[in-house]
Length: 195
Image (cartoon, rainbow, N blue to C red):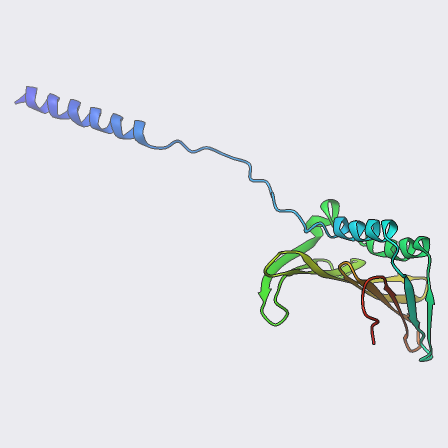
């Protein structure tokens, strides 16, 4: 009887040993964030390069706070200078941890919308919205909202880039204890005039 008891313990021991060997071992793997922001600046730079290489008629329309409106033809150099305002609003790589991304399909605009919202309400750049064509995934528009202070003035800006066609910069300035004044600058190179 003792012999059978020892054999039972031995078989149980072997069975347990086999089960332990088949158990997957825990492996610790560092998880890295592999997602990247949509490369807005690359597309804007492509549009700038296109304007530099092609003979577009470039013109600028300025709506002043008084309600008056000026329009004029501009040089490629002035176009590049004005478009540089968009390039300076880059939120890629270094600022990535400061923004929250959301992506959704907007059936109304037939766009895939990628929205980057600042986590910190004190950030100069508050929001970047990218609209991609839902069939081709090509860039349609970029909207950038930002605000910052200089001295006793609060500046709020809205940048709107229409891929391959035009851009608009709306700047609202509020000086302490006074009403805001707004200036709108539109630059067109391959589009119908804005209203």
